Amino acid sequence: DTGVSQNPRHKITKRGQNVTFRCDPISEHNRLYWYRQTLGQGPEFLTYFQNEAQLEKSRLLSDRFSAERPKGSFSTLEIQRTEQGDSAMYLCASSFGGTVPSYEQYFGPGTRLTVT
Amino acid sequence: AQKITQTQPGMFVQEKEAVTLDCTYDTSDQSYGLFWYKQPSSGEMIFLIYQGSYDEQNATEGRYSLNFQKARKSANLVISASQLGDSAMYFCAMREPNTGNQFYFGTGTSLTVIP
Image (cartoon, rainbow over all chains, first blue to last red; front, top):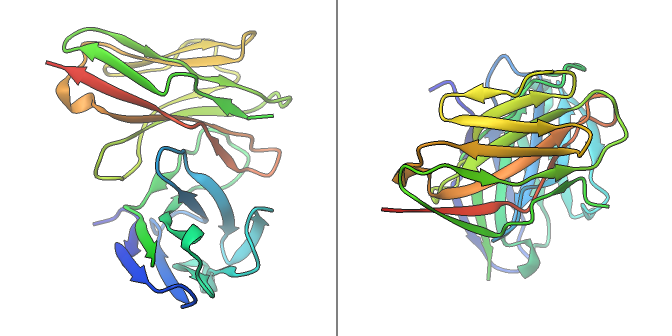
C-alpha cells in the first residue's frame, strides 16, 4: 500500500494524559500536513512540514501540541495534557512541494481521538 | 474573512440526475489552486478535481466538472448522473502557493443521493 497511513486509527484517553499519533506519508512527497476535523466541519490546518522543517504552525495551535518529522519521513503529533475539547479526527496529508498550485494533497484515514 | 465559503450544508439529488455544489473563495493572489474533495462516512478524504487560476477551460474528471468563474470567485462542482455512492460530504479547498502554502477548506456540503 503506497498511500498515506496513520496510526492508531482510534485513541481513547483520559483527560490530562499525553497522546502521540504517527503519520507515514507517500514516500515521494516532501510536504506533510496535519489537520484537525470536528463533526460537521472541514479540516482545520494545524501545521505543515517541508522535508524535516516545520514551516508553518497555526495560531490556533496551543503549546500543548507539538509535531516532528525527523529525517523528513514519518511525522508524529503529540498532544500533552489532553482536554475534552481535543476530541476530534486528526488527519495527515502529504503532497509534492514547490510553488506549483496543482499539487493535490493525499490524505490518510485519520486518527479519531476521544478524550473522556 | 473566510477563504472558502460553502453555503449549502445539505443537498439532495435524485439518482441519475446532475447536482451543483457551490463554492466561493477569497484571495488576492493571482496564482492559486482550487480543489474538491469527497469524504464518505468512512472518513477518508478523496481528491476529486483541480482547477488552476490560470486555466482557461473548466476542469473535468469523469462525471465531475468544475464550473470556474474567476471574476465571481466561484468554483462550483457539478456531478453528473448521480449515483448512490456519491452520497458523502464534499469539501472545496484552495491553495495559495505563494502565501504560506496552506490548504484552506470550506465547511462542506453533505450530499444525499435518493434512489
